[in-house]
Length: 52
Image (cartoon, rainbow, N blue to C red; front, side, top):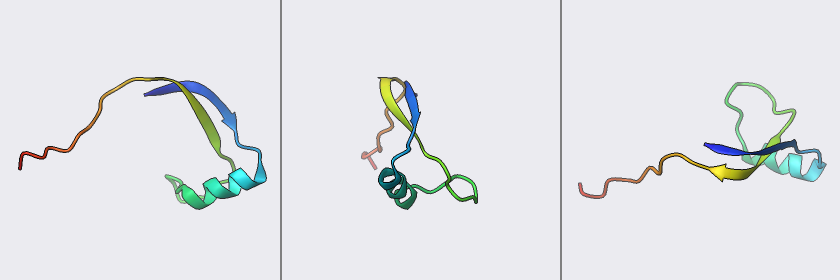
């Protein structure tokens, strides 16, 4: 889980970059992008089992 400050990406160049790099979870055009600056990270680390 990441906790932090969320802000809308307003810069046209940054927005275009994110639109190229990201894929929406739903079948819709990406009109806005929200950036979260992480302040607190917690959770589990998933690692591959290499014993096999």
